[in-house]
Picture (spheres, rainbow, N blue to C red):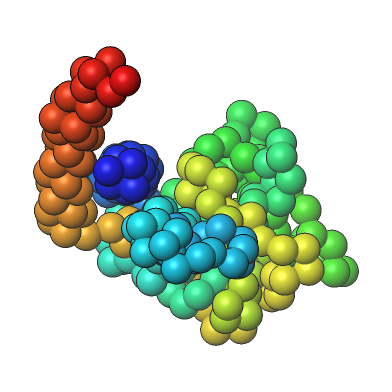
Length: 250
């Protein structure tokens, strides 16, 4: 009986975390450059750090817990905006931003110009560029008409200013979501992009399938409700009658 209650509670916790992940995906369906996340599970007996369990322990504790979440790095659809400050990345590359927490990587190309001419991400952080002579740093734009070419070269009124620092990672590199379409990566893992180019005047849409995410959310919510009912049944139909019988056992 306790094993059943533990299984239901464990599943309820896992579903609660999974609901948060799905809800966050749905909230960012229209966020440029957003990459969806998914949840995966493992048996409780596999999550105990490899400690040996007896046959009975294994049998009664073979239920799932949330093991973590994965990142879907597939490309989203590219939509034309006509805004000269927008760029969509064609390929596996990332733009580089300088944030208060350090270097971050993003696929969101909805750039803007700050009050002092700084080239900024949608979150207001400086975008890093190649400034010449091997120097990488924030880009400052002089006043004038800005244009960005497919290789990331930025010109103002036809004069070369800088080049966007576009980077890529080896397959299997573990990128960690930081929120706001930002990602962190292991130190030294980024290298100058060789397989990516830019599409000026366009943005990459979120890669979340809204219909599938809504379907998954409804299904997960139903499972969550059933688990809540199961816990109530364990409490009312099993535990309380058993407790009531205890005084009779003398």
